[in-house]
Image 1 (cartoon, one colour):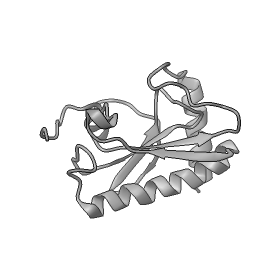
Image 2 (image 1 turned 90 degrees about the horizontal axis):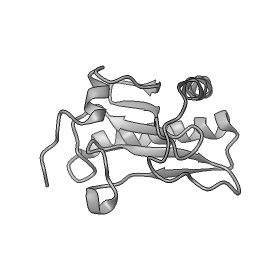
Image 3 (image 1 turned 180 degrees about the horizontal axis):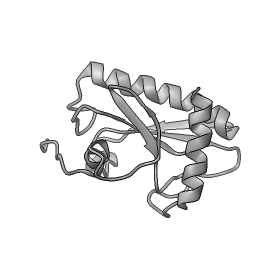
Length: 140
C-alpha cells in the first residue's frame, strides 16, 4: 500500500491550509461539510491522525471516527428532518476511495430522493454555511 501523503486535501484542511465548513471537532476528529454533497447536509468525518484508510489506521483512532460519525448521523437526522442516513467509507482506488485520508461520509436521506452522483456539482457557499449552522445547532 502506498504511504500516507501529507499533501492530500484533508491533511491540508487539518493544517488550516484549505478552508472547510466545520461542524464538529475534538482532539481526535474533524467533521465538515462536503463541498460536492450527494445530499443535503453531506458531512465528512476524518481522523486527525495521519491515516490513508481503514487498512492503516490504529483501531483506537478509527473508533474515534466511528463515534463522531454516529454523533453526526443523529444530529443530521434532526437538523434536516431526514428520513434516514447513509454512512459510507471507501478504501483504495478499487474500493472507490478518491481522497487518501480516511474519511466517513454521513449523508442524510429523504424518501424518494436519490443521492446525487459523486463529485457532480459544487454546492453554493451560502447553502453550505446554512447547513453547517443547522448541524452545529443540532449537535448542542
